[in-house]
Length: 278
Image 1 (spheres, rainbow, N blue to C red):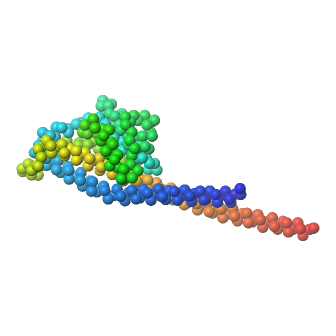
Image 2 (cartoon, rainbow, N blue to C red; image 1 turned 45 degrees about the vertical axis):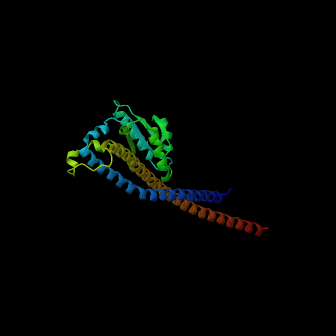
Image 3 (cartoon, rainbow, N blue to C red; image 1 turned 30 degrees about the vertical axis):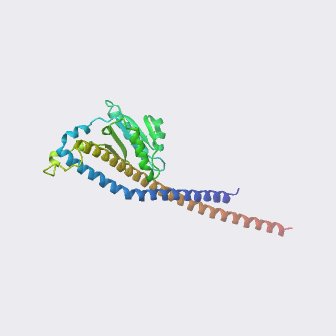
């Protein structure tokens, strides 16, 4: 195989890889567009439920004792199912390891979500449960349902979610902790209790469940948005590298072609000179 043919073969390989990476980037952009429609609505829902809860607990503070849990029993590490998203999973594990080092008096378990995250279990991370993460936004509801079923015997007030908030910025969300930090006497905005269609006990139970699901959807959506944003950025970087490499190979191929033409002309001239001496 000549030098030019080797370069041509390499150039064709880069072009094929570019097609694959472009497709991966487009998929990430599609998922980003879909999740961008859901996340604002979910964020608003969580905010509305928190406002209702503030109103409710302002007049029924006795129920607040049920969710004042300072210690955490379970950490949920929300990683990725697919790769090509930079340090998305590594920063989660570093945060979890740091928590283990600083909270030795309160042992905690971890549940890992995402194949790329749980594949790093050999790095000293002890996941008592490993679940697949979402590859598309449509898979998130079933994963949340599976998560809730696996943690059915653990009080949700003892769950803490560790997920990516922004690039290399970790968000640690302890469920129901916001309510425990509210000074309801200062936050109260109404003079009379809310009119309830249920008994306060039943209302509290339903409020608890609704808030749990709302927060889970919010953090899953947010994490999935960051994951695909990072993936799109990495695909952009890969495409730029491929384009630069292809340009260099094209120049090298042209130079190699010119060298072969020059060598061919020189060989012809030598043959003509040799034949003229016969």
